[in-house]
Image 1 (cartoon, one colour):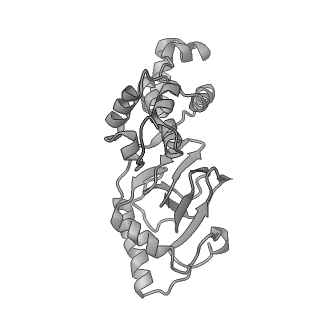
Image 2: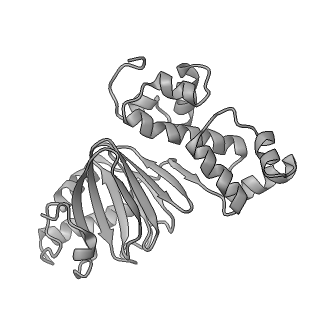
Length: 262
């Protein structure tokens, strides 16, 4: 069973898909790297934060994230993460997006992943293992996309401001603050921001705050502390915004069972 195995050691194996299971401790960071193959990673436990030069993706447990071939990325673990990684030959699933994407993992596909990571990299072709891997390839394009990404602009100074904001997010940041910092008119700033991110400043700011909250909540911080740090007047206001964006209150969405106030 290929557990805690590096893909470099088996990348040469002539199979369209290789599955590897790896255990990582809380806070572990995988430094920037890329793979020849595409990769679908998911965490049976814990949460995963994926970052590329273009953005950040937050992956709660029982969800996954698709990483196209040759995409530079680094990964941070929140909690103890039992990671399941599928490495896919380029072109084996042509319908997968050309950009990183967080996806939902159904109980059926989770079961397939558990089976897959028990198989040797060079599993027998034409048998049950081969059929299981082909079924995974068939199911991958059907995984539902989830709104758990935050894209960065390509514009240098604006991208720097966005990355600074991620380090110190606040729901009270304003267009006027940012346009002054960039020596731009309000109108020019709003046009540039939407062109570079695809979102209005207010929508991007809200998404940034909510996604920055997810790893903290998954790590066990109380909703009240996280909400107040982000500048929300109270945890109810934060919870309302979270539910409006993702369809469930934060603890329910993340699968966490504990008191809000703790």
